[in-house]
Image (tube, rainbow, N blue to C red; front, top):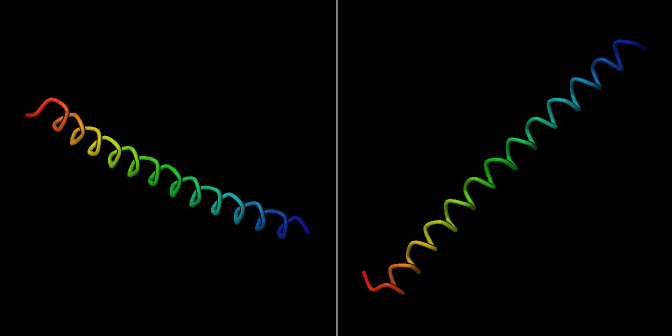
Length: 48
């Protein structure tokens, strides 16, 4: 019974880390895209 609980815990931990990594990666990717769009908008506004 204890082995089952340990296995389940490891599985949940692994899934949590994977999902967390995807969320962090997606957030960083989105922030870079938004930053690029902001730079382009600023260039249009200031005419550089």
